Amino acid sequence: MSLVNNDANHSPIASVYNLIPFYTEELVMPVLEQLMLKHLPKGAHILDIGCSNGQVLQQLQIRGYQTTGLDVCEELLRFARINSPESKFILSDIRKFQSPPIYDAVYSKNVFSFFLNLEELTTVFQNVMGAMRDNALFETFAYSSNECT
Picture (cartoon, rainbow, N blue to C red):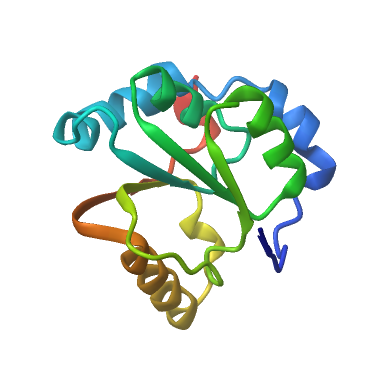
């Protein structure tokens, strides 16, 4: 599936990005465990918006969740398919993404800084809400690289 307006072109750096440790297990997973995963049964379907190279999806798979990754960068999704082969993937810009309500939880990391106005944010939140089942969870956060050292 492709619904892309690649405003943030990460393709040229995707291979390097895949080699950088993003402290997924040490930083991201404890946050997700505390804020989201402890409220979800195993097997719940989680959408990762801006899944990048699939490191978080891989960890979610290991923990027994169904996972779908969405990203605007085809090259990052290529690495995500390698890193988390059991996940499903969608090439799309979340501003254009449409889905029936099939997700038990939606997660994103470092994505919302790309939306520059209220109209884009409103569209994104409408698209996220449309993809979520009743009583689904939504978690988003950002961190900078200096927080990981």
